[in-house]
Length: 415
Ligand SMILES: [Zn+2]
Image 1 (tube, rainbow, N blue to C red):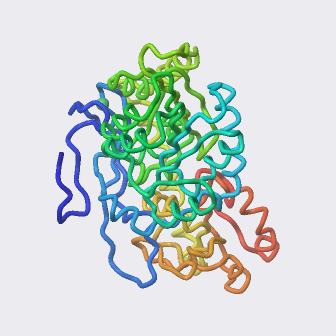
Image 2 (image 1 turned 135 degrees about the vertical axis):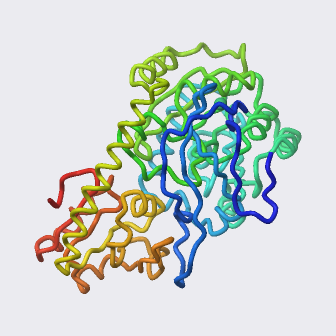
Image 3 (image 1 turned 120 degrees about the vertical axis):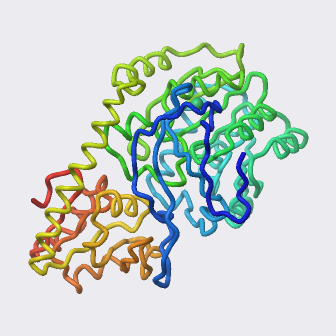
């Protein structure tokens, strides 16, 4: 394993799941600064590659470039409960999980990457013993204060052993949007195996590579997301560590996610037909086809959209129009770079206060609250958060009534 000392990123030579060096480049993405690195003063920012590879041995889709987590997460302030849709999501999640895995009350459930404890709270209300693990010290402290005990640390084999000694084994271990962000998968799986009861279940939620490709969700591909799982890559991965993928669900989270259930081999649960069904679907869509036609089509859709947007925006610019963007997110950075439109955008609006009055990563475009749409009156707004175009346009009907126009990537709105 390469060392991070004195460097802000390194490039892996091998697959992070199985160690194979048989990796094919499937998407070339523009190198970008860290997508969340909105800054208070203009400056030149470091750019890191975001090329995506597929492992020919275990089928995991992945980035090879790994940015030092201490740099990547240094300003991490994202609190789960702030996203309103997520609270309901986690309540439903706890409910459906306990239906599927009927464990007695007071069983231990551990959530890795538990954030502000929104999922732990849902399990606690179902009379379970709960424990969270999250390295974001301040968020962990607040969760603990609210009765949702959270250890402010990374989940390692050493910590797993300490938890086991103090609290016993866990009947359920959950990790939502954690595994895909970790380079050292071996370490986290070994920790899970130490803490999990022999009849326990490990549940992982991660973005689905098939959904990303089918729906051209390029804005989900960025430095934090090191791995993009599928049913087949999950099965191969768990198998490598003497675990068994027993069930898999597709959810609508983040444009399409997978929820994978694993137990120890020879564990008590019967393997659901969902696993093979999804693998068959993935194969029929060409996800593992060596001709890579599925990926070539994805790349062509992105290239066509880039050409279309550049054509529209350069024409508007030559007519002296003002063009703004909406949405100062990590995804916006990907869109600005990979659709080639960063240089056309004069400013960006966002409703989220911590993202206002800053400069965007790389292009250093100033960000403002969305009320300013009505005082600055841009001629056009590009929906950088294109998957949420509908509610954004609905909320800003007045902008349209005043003669403004929205342009939405991957749609014909605004033409
Ligand atoms: Zn592999």
